Amino acid sequence: MTDMIPSFPILLQRFFVDYLRQQRAVSPSTVAAYRDTFKLLLAFSVKAIGKAPTDLALTDLNATLILSFLDHLERERKNSVRSRNARLSAIRSFLKFAAHEDLTALAVIERSLAVPQKRHDKVVLGVLSRPEMDAIIAAPDCATWAGRRDQALFTLLYNTGARVSEAIGLRVGDVVLDVSPVAHLHGKGRKRRSVPLWKATAATLRQWRRHLPDAGPQGYLFPSSAGRRLSRSSVTQRLAQAVAQAAHKLPALAERAISPHTIRHTTAMHLLQSGVDITVIALWLGHEHPSTTHIYMEADLAMKEEALSRLQPIATTPARYRPPDQLMAFLQSL
Image (cartoon, rainbow, N blue to C red; front, side, top):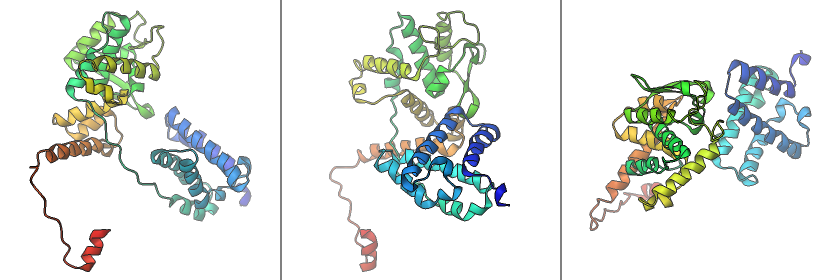
């Protein structure tokens, strides 16, 4: 019976090949992220317990080793709490898979799965005002081919709230500009969603398509000057140039850290502030769970509270809370 239990190396290979790629059909980026996690974990295990990766047993992945590894990520590799939690999620996914394959390791797996995610402060979302977004879209020099492309790209990013990877992967045939303009985006995990285009966006894209080389429906909508797929770094660089140009009119932009993802946050916030339902925004952005979209509602409330605090009369002094007894004083001091 013992001979039928798969070894740790076999389990790990099955996890990646059979479970992730075939059964769950996750995206290549997810596979790469999980792969990197286990490369780090296995390298750490060599130093921590003196075992080569091929000699490891499933029971070696106990809570002590995992906690030590997570601590190593934060202290020595200077990973953020978010990165630490992402690595832990990858390990948990493997352990849940392995629990069905090796029942003899269930006790160890259960204790390892009990290792908690670490709490962290939520990052305050950076969003642009409508005048700032308009200034950035208008900034590229439309007398040049690259400037016309950049303006069309930034317009589409703002309209759709697309991830930069979705925008640069768009083909000419993915965008319909006839009666009901729409962009068909290919998102994370091979998910596809359709986002309606505003009339102004459709008009901008029609003008831009006239300047595209005739590459057919499969040609990139926003190609590089060489006709190839535009890189993420190129989009970031071109956006930085547009922001610098827009800062001549709106100097506050020069002090902001603005990335393509900032435009995505801006789209979501503007939709929310325009009264669009949060579930519709989740579909618009391609969020798998509407709860992910709640960060925009929380950020909007935080902004409103900040604005409200500025309206408080300067002379107003709020009464200090006085606890009624020693026990309440103790609780208040915590």
